[in-house]
Image (tube, helix red, strand yellow):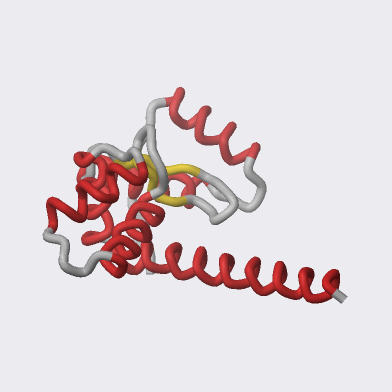
Length: 146
């Protein structure tokens, strides 16, 4: 449960916060401020991570790169396909296949290590979505094949 805190903002910050809230129905100044403070602290803890909105909601992404969950999924897939690779080889393989720099792969791993439930939930959601799309495509092929 959230604990009330007294925080003082400059007038310009209050105006921008109010403007943001007015453009996003359902949000409150308190919820937006709490989210942005949390995200700011996470970005400070994990340089190279930023946050984006999208179809899967607000999520951690790599600056100039993919979402953190996508990197973790790629690393898991590579580990499954190549279980004998050591850490540097695994990272090199994923870097070569994704075009994501090694430094950013390590940033993604560090973020996942700190917030595994958040990232794993996105990986699981993507897997369920992929499965649903595959099943729908199979049904369509079955219908059209006669």
